[in-house]
Image (cartoon, rainbow, N blue to C red; front, top):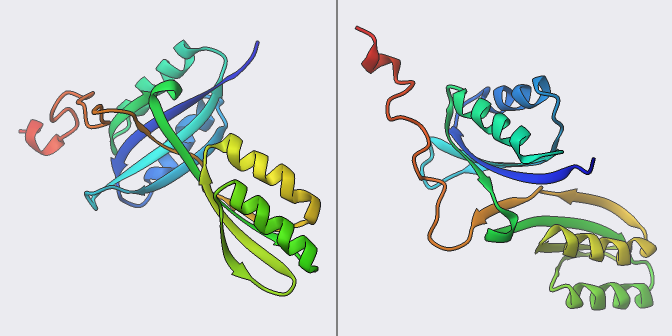
Length: 183
């Protein structure tokens, strides 16, 4: 059966050990995280994780989402629909460019893909491009003929299109606030 890619947006406490808790849950359930991007939100106490995972069916992912919601440091989990979300990743790639001809060809390719040349040396060019994974893969396939010296990808980050946000309540208020519930 074909495995499909699912994207989860997760708001969590911005504190030590949270990433470890989330990744352990995926490992225990037998899922490999294909892509993971984490950063703080407009609230410095909260981080946003964008997690991509492969699964055979959506019911499996829904179970995983429900398990994530039970973790203490997790505020919100949302399964993003790829057709209704904006998805991007940052790609940095250092390419061998030892001749003027190679350098010119790489610069032309970067221009076609709306990439930026961010570092130039006599031996190499470093390119930065932000786009969908397919666009970044296409650029990589064309420039790998010149020799990739180094590569870094951020992993996908995503937001829903339109007015919908991740802040829609998915947990009962004060569900895990032990200070208020303990007498």
